[in-house]
Image 1 (cartoon, rainbow, N blue to C red):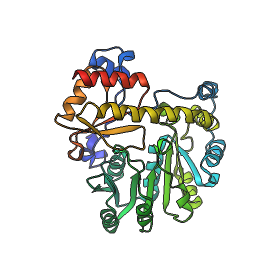
Image 2: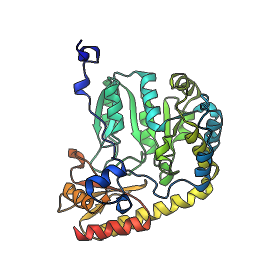
Image 3: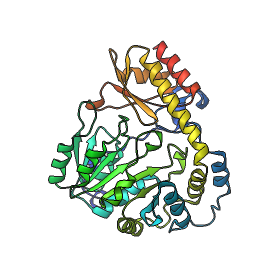
Image 4: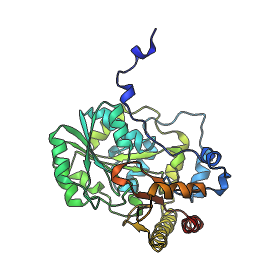
Length: 356
């Protein structure tokens, strides 16, 4: 039997998502111990979770199945964002919720302003939806006319990130309302909103086709547990609950997320430190004379590399154990993205940049 005949015909045309490699793998490739690596390539919170979050995770009853209705977690999230629990759905990271939304709509096409988070195109392709990429303007603002045209071409979902990854800029409120007026589902990914910008959750009351996604990966330091959530119209949220896997948030992630929400006041201090370090890092890099930072409302900064090859810069930093993100795509050909870490991480970064 030829196995290939049993599989979907478009497998060879699918594009794999390129995730960051584990620290142990990177350390082996570079030839340095793990504790010598400076990980500024994945927008993680290098301070880690709140101590009470760690206690909650360690105390989770992992021998018991999670609550399929996510009752306690949804209630806690609702209180945090000022919504009703019926509007909230939790998932295995925001990626899980993106997948649920695509399966809910089953669109023929999805509009994606680029450059942006690569998961949108990946999920569109594996769902057999045509990704309609709408290039952003030279300053990386949205092309609203282009997005309207994409919807006219059949885009049943528009994916927006605010603040956008990797450019760091937020969606303009008036432009978002214009997009929400279209006959399409509008999904705003607010993975970085805790670091700056303004949430658009209040707009859901007047735009039933608006869905807002959030994550605990960045501000709460829970990237390894994979937990995120959506806020939307109660009817839409109800359909999402019907489509999701029953146990899509494990008990450790549930406990860690609720602990993070309970201790948000203390975690805000860590968020403030990350924002301050982001700005210090941007200023120090700009002072080198060949790295031009773009304004950012996230926990990273996108830099235009002037007079040098961005690929070579990223490679040279990697050889010194400093990991940053380089994108092999034309619209970001000479840019690198650097996550905001701790002061000691910034110091290692700057020292390495001065040596290359």
